[in-house]
Amino acid sequence: MELLSQRHHTILFTKGSPAEQNRKIEASGLSGFFKAIEIVREKSVDVFQELIERHRLSKPNTWMVGNSPRSDINPAIAAGIRAFYIPHPWTWERERQDLCASDRVTVLHRFSDLLEHL
Image (cartoon, rainbow, N blue to C red; front, side):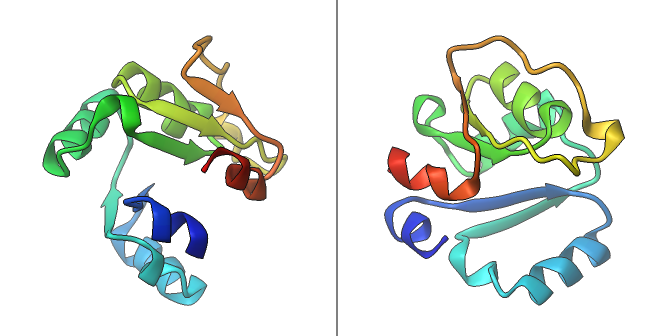
């Protein structure tokens, strides 16, 4: 995470109860690696668009990294950015959905594989 945050503008974009998510972020010790932390109730194409606009992100150079096709990958692609999908066997059943077919999605086997794409 340190190398990614040194080379890229990183934003933690998560969904859920703000109190619960803030507690998890604090416990993880990772907050210092992010330029911004955004917590929303639900992720959608519109919410991704708002994030892109608020942070003035360049769509061709912006990537979502996540394990949920439903909340992370598919809405990110629909909003016009790229995505790294890292499947996880314990992804919550409600978050499972077919992965959209797009040349803007790169599937990785583990988080550390991101280092190959810096």
